[in-house]
Amino acid sequence: MSLIAGSYEKFIWGFKLKPLKHSPDGHTLTLTKLFCYPSHLSPISSVAAAGPVAASGAGDDTVHLYDLTAASSLGSLHHHSATVTALCFYTPSHLSFPRNLLSASADGSVCIFDADPFVHLTTVRVHKKGGVNSISVHPSGKLALTVGRDECLAMVNLVRGRRSFCCRLGKEASLVGFDLSGERFFMVMGDRVGVHEAEDARLVWEMETGKRVLCAAPGESGLLYTGGEDRSVTAWDTKTGKIAYQIEDAHSTRVKGIVVLSKSNDTSVEDDPYLVTSASSDGVIRVWDVRMASKEKPVPLAEVNTKSRLTCLAGTSLKSLRRPQLGEKVSKEDMVADGAS
Image (cartoon, rainbow, N blue to C red; front, top):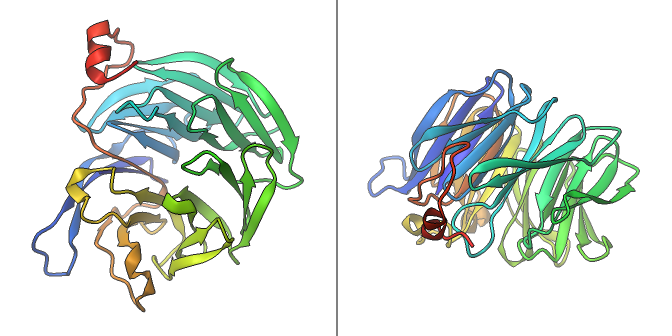
């Protein structure tokens, strides 16, 4: 498992999660640094990761790409004319690396890229009166949802490359995301999290957190993990709309990123299938065993202090696959070897 974090100081951080046999502080896992360098000219606003690749976006209007296997840069994409506000990969279930990358910006546009290699396919103007706050691709890869500064929810048809639906919400949503099944999606508005049916957008549950939610990530069995100004990591049961469990005071400051690690992500940590990683604006990244949430003071399995003001966090399994360089042509034999259809 690898993690990638962006910071206000323009630095990108890459870590690999490994088992730790002997530790004086009781940690059973360790976060080993893969890379750390100033990759952007402005604070990093968004990161995404899938398979052996990762991407970051910032206020310099660019998307930077990273090879996590080689711990190196793959280059950058310059197709936006405003701050890159959100990133999202789409990876079919039968592939080991992503098929598409979607990047959204403060001018309301969404760029769609072929990720093998990274080639620009089209740009869609999704929100006409404000920037995009968040984007999420359906597990089928046929559509994506976005929310923007214009207080709208929009749907992008990824097959035809155009906006197919847009509706006013009456209030600005900061986050949107599908659950793992694609049957439901969630939206975050301030301190409220709404769970909706994907088929007709019907509101199923609305959970009130008490303080502003800054990050969210879906988990197995209908769980939704949230973090924010309450400094805690909370698991919501979207089947009942109630809290399943909570790690209180997970950090000393607000939580800016959450990544749910499952048993299938990486064989090196398969003995710990209940892992959740959180990042805080104080620069600390921690890995938790959610089964310890019932304890009065749960101890993280691993942690690292980047000493940076972290703004976002993403995670992915780390496969030993070679990624094509930016603009490199890929032969049919290479595509078959990499598992592409």
